[in-house]
Image (cartoon, rainbow, N blue to C red; front, side, top):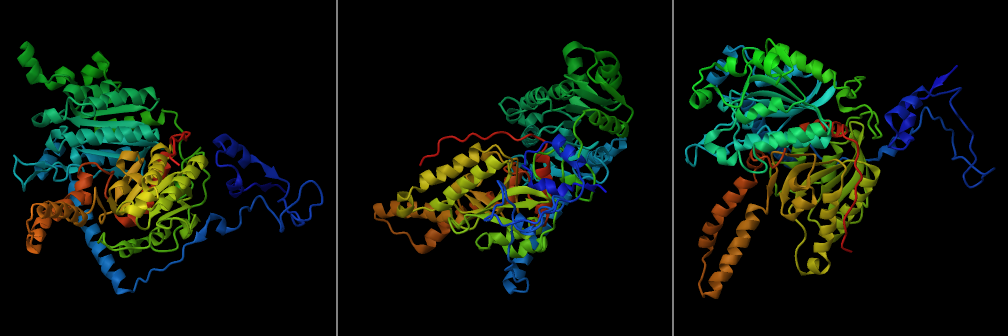
Length: 623
């Protein structure tokens, strides 16, 4: 009787086994499981020998410790300190969810009512109908534009631009991971504020980095004219959208436009530059100049539908390829377009299927839940950046089986490095556990080299106030050792993911793969803070400079006066370091509940596997 060669045996094969090889191996059968009584390696009986014990390829590997050692739980959930920290984090996450719920409504009630009266689906309903039933949608930058634009110069009132007027995210359409960019015409008529442009361009950047087809659900009035100087002329302004479309298509990354409403002026190039375009009759319009401009320029009186409606562009101009009768019909046509892309599709064997891509060069394992409750993260970290915590307890609640293989455990202990898995996918983790010393920086650079050679993605868990300073630190070469870490982070081509779980200050942000260093995705927890330094440190530094200047002039500075000087500085730095402030400006890809981190990372890691691995070439490391 033939015994099937189990897929578990593949995990001992090299990680670069191709999809076709895996399929061939799956079809391979043995007459019976191979079981050999083995002499010891120290007593070879021929030119080869066997390890002690019996071996079955169908069962190997059998030792769960191959996945790493279990991180011991040291968290006392009954301790008063834990409960207090958990309550503070619960307050932060509650506020975050409330804000996101409000933002998800889009424009005001009247704007939504007008939109629906035109028999148009709301943008989030459009996305829901486009996605495969039951599949996840990883939304990006939900807080974009939050309290970003002042009303008529007023200091305490803001123009409401929910989600920056555009919804972006990654979802599965006809079995294919796609970047979806949906204008929200209930927000300022779908016009592009500067933050809207930035969010659109960021979505295209993610699509390029991860080889994701782009689907543009177009319903926009074009640029927001009162801010045209911040929208139109510069390198990363409105024109970059079309530049990116052309280059994405040249890289064989499909560009699909679905015109569900207005598509005016420069925005008309979105469908015109797409590989395929769909338009809704008597609803979608495409024109470089609308009816008022046409009348002013030529005297011609024409309706929007006559000028650039679905019949014009599907039957006469050829700008669009598919004519739909409604939003629903247009989205169904879009799903069929994606199905025709001839892209690999992920299997659906289990509840975890949306995390496991097909044809990956990465060695996968069955997903295993952490041993400890992820909801305990709030009590571990708390809502106060000044509170220390054991970062390994955070890792234990994110990784499969709470297992990891730590690297250089006793060297450079303020930086924790190790290998683990998240939903069966391998990941290298670099996590702060204090200030970065020279040893920690060198350790981190070494670990990044290992992950780059092994094609293992990297996760950075940031809680860093910076590198060590002082005479001894400078003499030990903290600058050149820190530069090693920054160089390694900068040049590593493997997928990198960053989560700010605490502080992210100064050069520590750079060494731990901050926004400028190209992580595929970057998120913050609601307790996080980001800036050149903390408010207390900034107030102290500026006060010291002021005090020194006064001393040189022979002036006294009373304690009360110094505190009055420090107060506004603390407040400003605290405000500008807040995660909402950062996310509103797209310094990250979103603020997330710590309890959602494992699922969010699993989705992001799976998405990153859509692009083949690139070879890393490091620059010069100063020794």
